[in-house]
Length: 227
Image (cartoon, rainbow, N blue to C red; front, side, top):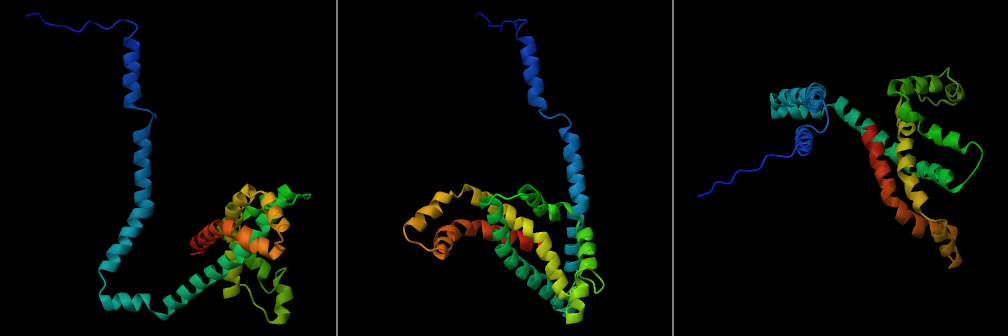
């Protein structure tokens, strides 16, 4: 009975086999270190605080839990948070659509500058935005000094929270609607107008059905950011 032995690899095949083995072992260098750092960071920043909140809640009785979530201060915080974010989202849906429409459909001097200014709330830290808006709408601020004689107080009120949420939420709607508007050809509007549709009918029956998903997405992003 003859025994079969595998012939030795040719010298030209040895480097290829070693390279293939190295490529299957590690594709990205330092993957283990970066994955460990990522898991440790998420654990300390996200998982540990959430776990502490669940543990603290689990130690409460049902009556204590209901009293904590239904106290007057908590109800007032719910009303302020959800009410202001809802109002800011609705306002940003309207004005975000207008800003996106102007940036897509019209050409004018300074268009690129205005397009860049839209992203300013993204780059501006939340604390800096709050301090700037407070200084503007304070009774001695640039805007607040004109509102104070009329009895209108914005800083440190519900209106101030609404203004701040509107300021930080506008880019979410604009950047969500803008790509959809760029994909909508103006010929569609011209065809609808040629068939006898008025401007309001073009907006209501041609544009809004196409833009509504992106508008709702922008509204949800504003609510999530404001909440």
